Image 1 (cartoon, one colour):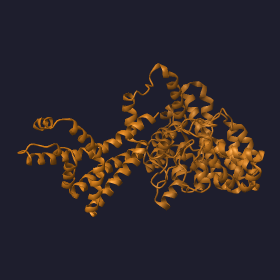
Image 2: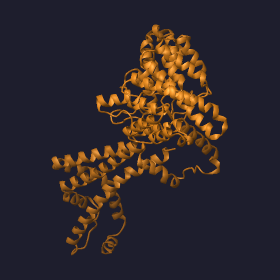
Image 3: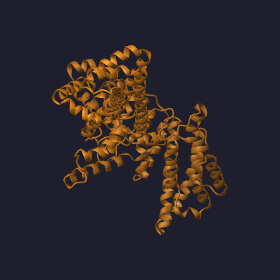
Length: 560
């Protein structure tokens, strides 16, 4: 769609600078000719005075090196300013300003297709469907393996002085807490009313003080949650607070369960108490996993999934997959994948790459690229390679972290599926599992780049999944600390033609200005030779015109 406007802009951009030089030269030529004409005004003008070799030579001889320096220096300055603006616009908006203007304003002048016409209604509908799918895929999800703020994120800040979480990420967490841990009936219980205000506080110390104030009134489960997440400095301390929260949360859950059918207010309160209880049990299982009690953690996760099978928003099965991989219980991992790796369920990097790891495990210990190139891939090896290609197509950012081609950072509290944030969250916890399987990383290293040969246009069509969404870079830059982390971008954006063209033009004119300043005589010879060659067709035409038209006509024209 950009080819016609792009070609036109290349043409206009090139001729703009050509006309700029010609206008400057023509103005000086006219000025010099007028001076020369005044000197010969007392005599009858001859045809040789107008536009022949002598007048051209006279014009060229009057040009000093300072003129060439000024001309090329001005052009270089203008090109440099345009280059800086184009680069800034490209870095901020991901597109060329000149190209965008050409698409928006030149296409109607060039006879471009109007997308609003009835003939293209099908195309427009298809684009709308694609945009809706892209928006749905760019939904931000809660990271099921998110770390503890006090015991992990804050400790990282104390040691390094860096903030691992962005304001956007923490603001999303605050919204999640208000959704999960508050309801309209909180004003009926004083402690819950205090916590409702605490979840809206931006200052961490104010939130912690409000939680202590709520606990002075009664045992409040959400107050214990806040202290476990933000005040506890170790996982052991967090686990103790979560156990206290569990005791308080179970009591509230039982009471609200008995009253849930008495009205919409009690139903909302029971829904809130259910979310609180599920959150506490899930975090307790994560504490057990972090403290090395993996089997206990697996049992708690299985019990939680059986007790609340409909609460898929927490993605507890991803926690379960990671714990089972730690136990090297690959049969149970396969059983979980068989349930959740379904076409009707949303995918994730954990699902796709764990499935690839299991298939790679069957062949990776004996896999050799040289032997495979000689004899071809076996059925099992082909299945493993296809699983890797499937995983890479879903999230192409993960392999560089698993192969340690990019450094890892702490995962954010929210992730964007198929984005760099999800890749970091997956690799942070699963890199050790890939290293544990002999040859798995070698197989990944040999085959992952082959995925891109199967997807010639990743932004327009996909192979096994929907086309890769174009909004991931913007969302990942909001979720990840770009101060010390370079966000992975797929597909790699090529520099627009106009940035390259302007950079080349700026460099060329600046070099001409420098050479003219350093070697004025030599550059003057080159400039005269170039202009003589350039004006040769014009001189030839002028000579033919002079030979045809009478000299009296020239005299009348000069008097006009």
